[in-house]
Image 1 (cartoon, helix red, strand yellow):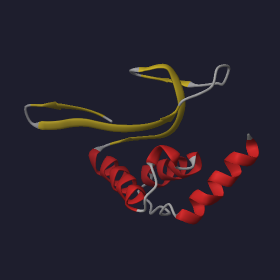
Image 2: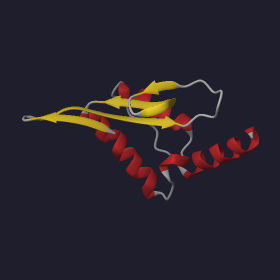
Image 3: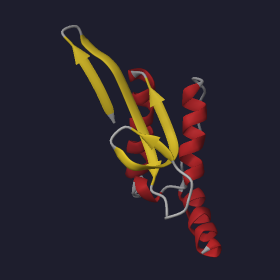
Length: 106
């Protein structure tokens, strides 16, 4: 999460959720992330950033560590919050399906 302020308050706020990549995988570059990563979510503007933070709090409240969440959920949040639409809440069932899918793809 990055933000900047001046004497009048916050002028920019941004949150990025990025997956680290294996050697040879394509990646996007981001400030302060070397060499870069797979951008799953990139939201700017304080009201939208607050919605992302609330979604992260909800994930933690059900006992799931946010880095373990399915990448598709972060992309879903990125698209829905980006256009001010409601989003699906991450569930234990969705998480279990992601863990099984990840295991099969290894």
